[in-house]
Image 1: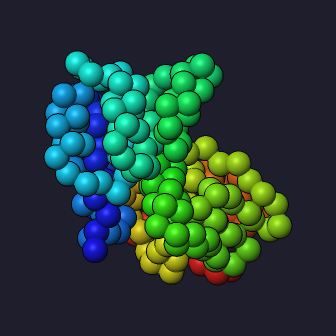
Image 2: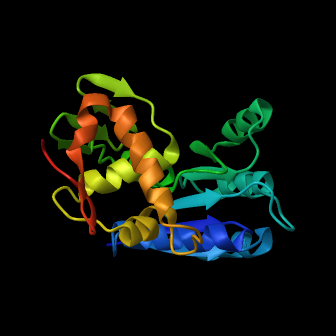
Length: 226
């Protein structure tokens, strides 16, 4: 049975790329619906039951803080604030109102997806660490921790998303077009050489483990065990 997730967000592009990413990541796992303003969000919150709500703060009409207060008067559904606000006092206010987590724009879709999964599993009593390993590289999807050759790494969002996609498709030959579609999104307009640039950065960050990402001449790239 699919998790019912409501995204209340006034930015049409964020709504679209989030829907696309969740659909592509685990088809059938999420029933993600969207609302473009506070009033629509309020109506949908009251009319249906949700497993999790992604809530922007700066919304037309009713703002996210007001919606959060309303949610906590009648239900215990997990809420992640999805917002451009990064001031500490705004985060504190969100937590005081009862939100479960915060993601600040511009955000990594992989990070958002991992947080949604972690919170849902915690809420449903199914806390399971999802760890992917390939050769000397390990990624913990729940804690967003990356280790390579025994070292813990801090990767920028795009390099992290690339690595996760490679790890989930180890042994596959992945074209630049595929990586652009799955990591940058269908709405990305730009030269596919951006893929090469980020893979170069990722290999460097991985150190000796970077050679697990192999170039396949005229085809693309693939992740190997070693």
